[in-house]
Amino acid sequence: MADKTFAEINAKIQAGKAVVVTADELVQLVAEKGVGPAAKEVDVVTTGTFGPMCSSGAYFNFGHSAPRIKFHRVWLNGVPAATGFAAVDAFMGATALPDDDPLNTNHPGDFRYGGGHVIEDFVAGKSVRLKVLGYGTDCYPRRELETTVNLDDLNEAVLFNPRNAYQNYACAVNTGPRTLYTYMGVLKPGLGNAHFSTSGQLSPLLKDPYFRTIGLGTRIFLGGGIGYVVWNGTQHFPAIPALPEGAPPVPSGGTLAVLGDLKQMSPKWLRGTSMLGYGATLTVGIGIPIPILNEEICYYASRPDSELYAPIIDYAEAYPNRKPGNLGQVSYAALKSGAITLDEKEVPTAPVSSYHKAREISAILKQWLLEGKFLLGEPVQLLPGPDAGIKPKSLEIRGSGRRNG
Image 1 (tube, rainbow, N blue to C red):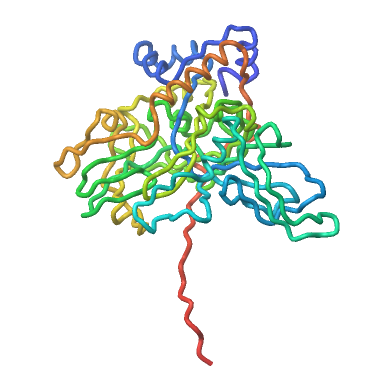
Image 2: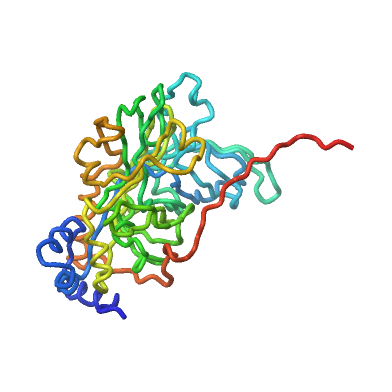
């Protein structure tokens, strides 16, 4: 049974009496006072992450032209958007690319502009070129439309990200003989570097690893505005990996589907991103408040970088060919130190996500709570945790030979 409830904590927030700390601050507080006293003292812990999140996008309702047109094909600043929803609705995926992008024909490709950049341009208040082709119907007779639009012109503009805020992610290395261009950045051959992409002790889903407080309706910081968890993310498999002896059994692989009003958001926290040799994406800022309902929640929310581990994955062979296993586990304390030791070699490390920005997000969310501008959204249903028995499915590739007879 919870020692505190969402309603009790929200009442304290509204009264200006809630004790709110960032996850960084909770780590220090528990080190000084212990879990029990900290759980009684603290009401809410804020978290943050800011990194590339490919499974992101935005849907738009553009309103009707005169005469009306039914969208069949749509481009925004030359980047194709998905149609097939209704007459004047479209969805722009973060990784969409212009039809004339050279891609990797001259490897490594630059991928200078894509769907994530279109979303950033909208949020920044810029005008965006809209080109539409229709096929003509009695009720939607127009066949072509070219104009410019901005965010204020749109009926609806909603950020909808099917998979964000990975609970944990791999430490990527390259044991092969050539440079690799990946969504984890440029990986040098022969263990020349190691990249990671999780904010460790600030990472939202590492701070509530069993999803005791996060579910449908959880209110979050999203792209500089207020958003919501609307489902578990795609590829949500919060299994408990094999960890070094003494490490707490923190799951990894949980993800979130999130949604929010794009008109509230800021280009500071939604950034179109080009990844050399890989593609375009969107860098997203997310912060999640974790109510400290009891000591168990406080314990996991206070785990430091030294107790949180990422698997080391070889992107030369194991990752692209989906081979199981890893090269070991490494703590976020070691990753953040600037170098790790692997195969008796010192390997320099670097983050793909920004810990500095993650700290800023957690601090902003803390201030919103202290000022009573933000209340906790009590979930109507918690997300499935590692005890739900969810297992990933894979696509089995079958031959396509002809049958005789």
